[in-house]
Image (cartoon, rainbow, N blue to C red; front, side, top):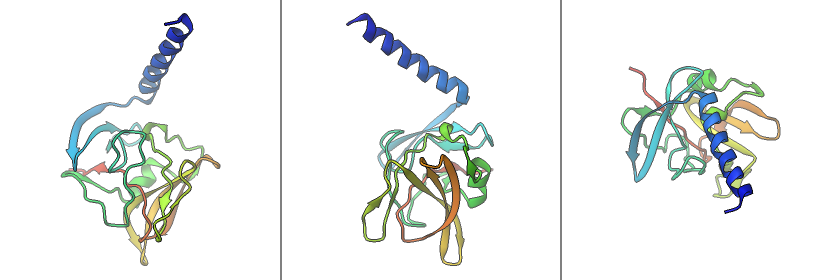
Length: 166
């Protein structure tokens, strides 16, 4: 192995350690659900416990499943966050720091089964309904923004679970 390769490998390890230290993330438990292993971490914003990946994802950076509203099954003790819970974690504004959640830009699934905006955008369901629609959080890379909107319940969006309180 060349010295340059060793230096690059050491830089990668240091970067990963620095990122974890900066984010102050603590893993609390491992959950096995529907054939997938999930870890949990504590939000540096609210102190709430979240799963480390989208529901149905085999690894942290994987997109995971695309669910219509209300379709996602949750492991015991976890739930789809409400619109209010998302608002506390991801306020609607430009330059919101969401790196600690490690949210892959999965795009979304249209009602005809096609996939849109993978790699540039993601849409995450909340559990809150309004006038036949459901609220979700949108993350855009092109705007470096987090936004909230009402989506058709028939779209396939990502799901990130939060531990129930109490």
